[in-house]
Structures are given as structure tokens and as C-alpha cells.
Image (cartoon, rainbow, N blue to C red; front, side, top):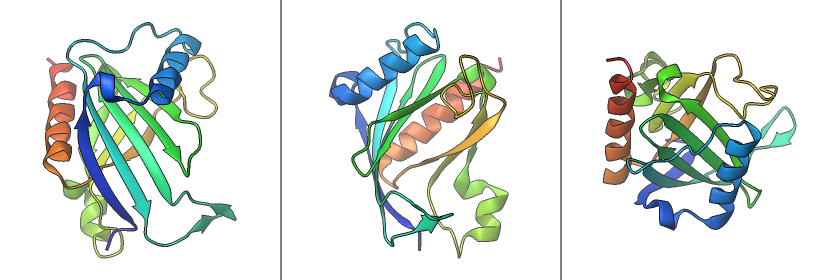
Length: 168
């Protein structure tokens, strides 16, 4: 059983909460990225509720996380907030990213009984990673948790296809 109960839904750009769009725009300005979205932008919102309280190294892990993932033709934008905190934003150019569906990953096969989940590992040179300064960080990985709804499946396919298009 997963540590989280997740639900994912599709959103239009206009449905993204103002505080999330403000955080994304501030991030783009801080890192001098320009306008990140285009008419091809696909958006999902995932609400993740931790089933049990947890601490890691004495720090409470958020029990309620809302994430917004936006996929344009050139960028992956990830904004998340836990337990009512301000959204944190990370971005990666698709040309710099690789993705792996957790359900088909070696980790999933080894850990399924202990850590079942749904989503994607994204590896790349992210902006917004702690220590990243005003340049792209060294390669890092993040897990983007998704629910099992149709919107999550469609987003996953769109993400994999967008990455593949940058390789042509």
C-alpha cells in the first residue's frame, strides 16, 4: 500500500491557482528563463495525502501536498506546496531531461510491496533545486507522484512523448 493517496486532474492554464502562477512567474524571472508556457502547455494538479505521519531526520514530512505540473513544448514546470506552505517551483528544459515511469522502473520491481506508487522519476538539470543558484544545478532527480486517473495516464504519455520529440 502506498504511503500516499493521490488524485490527479487536468487543468487549463486559467485554472491554475493565482499563488502557483505567481510562484512560477517569480521563478522564471529569478532564473531569467523568459516565458515558460506556450499554447501546447498541458497541466495537471495532484493532491497527495500521506496516510501516516512521518519524520525524516527529525523533520516532519508534509501530510497534504498539492502539486501542479505544467508541460510546455520546451519546459517541464513543477510547483508543489505541503501543508499550506507557499509553492516551491522547479523547472527543467525538456532537452535536458529524462523520464522513467515508476511502474516500469527497476526500483518499482524491487520495492513494490514496500513502496507501491504511481508517477515518474524525472532526471535533469533543474533550476530551483537548493544550491542551484542562478544557473542550472547539477543533474538531479525528482519524483512526480500522480494518481491513477485517466488525466494522470494522459499526462504521463504526453510527458514521455514531449521528451522523445526533443531527441529527434
